[in-house]
Amino acid sequence: MTQGPGAEPLTLPILTAIQSMQGTVTLARILAQGGRQIDLAGLDAEAARLCTAVALLPAFAARPLRPALEALVAEVEGLAAALPSPPAEA
Image 1 (cartoon, one colour):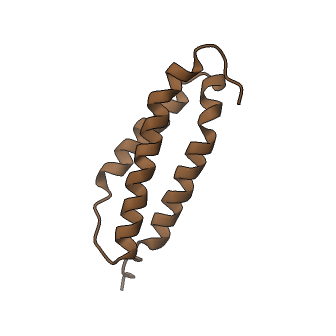
Image 2 (cartoon, rainbow, N blue to C red):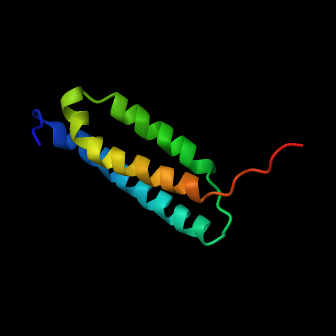
């Protein structure tokens, strides 16, 4: 994985935040699969912050984050599949 000069200091905090969010989403998925109610209110704001942080990076610095972001997306999709469907409107 080739990075430009100074990429790691730019991406390390963002990578840490991505991995932290993935852990949170994994836990939420496990709880949802177990039938527990979960509050997802904070995830939207955190996802928006991560997206903004990645978008502000130069391309050479953002590129190495792709695998972590793809893993996060996969976990979010797993969480979405584990959530109960909303009741149909009459």
